[in-house]
Image (cartoon, rainbow, N blue to C red):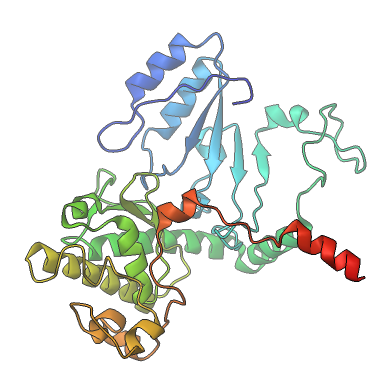
Amino acid sequence: MAGMQVIVTKCDEHGNIDLADLRANAEKYKDNLACLMVTYPSTHGVFEEAIQEICSMIHEFGGQVYMDGANMNAQVGLTSPAMIGADVCHLNLHKTFCIPHGGGGPGMGPICVASHLVPFLPHHAVVSFSNSKETAVSAAPWGSASILTISYAYIAMMGGEGLTNATKMAILNANYIKKRLEGHYNALYAGKNGTCAHEFIADCRDFKAQGVEVADMAKRLMDYGFHAPTVSFPVAGTLMIEPTESEDRAELDRFCEALIAIREEIREIEAGKAEKGNNVIVNAPHTALMVTASNWEKPYSREKAAYPLPYLRVGKYFPAVAKIDNAYGDRNLVCACIPVEEYASEEAVA
């Protein structure tokens, strides 16, 4: 990575950075230590309680701290990269600052630095805004103006109090879901008080024994009207649940009821009431064409497939496509472009 050697730091059983291992590596590589890259709160959904000690340790051995700003949704108004001791961070505008997340964009990530690194920020050949001699790394000096105006308007309308409340609600919503799912799903990591940050990891790995993969659960969620949370990241076989501040209590409850209902469907497999390998989860999602077809040979009812909970009768979303083979699709890419010969024939006609 940029000519540097990456040293992986261990985590303890609670998902926190192993301080002893970090210190040992920092001391071992102190002559060449460039920086530590850390996500705060961690990608495990936990506030690293020793984050200030971690940053101080890196500074002690001559390094800088690069903070991944992906989880600013749990920081704004309550803490800050400067408060924990970071030297550099990027701020993902998606989620935290009102830009859509996923689907390939749009993306923006302003880079923020502490004052001692300002002289190293890049200059621009066309727009003069710095005395730095560093060359630009982006064609546009301030990134995409069309995206930045959305975040600017959001920040201006929310104000400091509004942004702080959004952070509090994001944390509250994640902990509300975590609490409601207790007894059905195990949260992989939590802080010492049993709480999480703005996200948590629901462990689904034990369900493989019943022939149910986390990807099957994600597709079954479509039958319940939900796009699945992040699947198999940062831990394979899990769901990373990150509600943000955007959803109201009723929507959070519907989501929890859907996940609990799916867990009950897995319990039916465990109890032998549903057939392993041919059940409502592994066959999901169910399209409108499937459930209205004259021929129905599934070992469960059409109602169970399409309307497993009462709220779906009020507003039902039917997926347009039934289950696909993910692995086959990944390994057998299909070009959507027309053959080159067709371009030649168009020129001949013209």
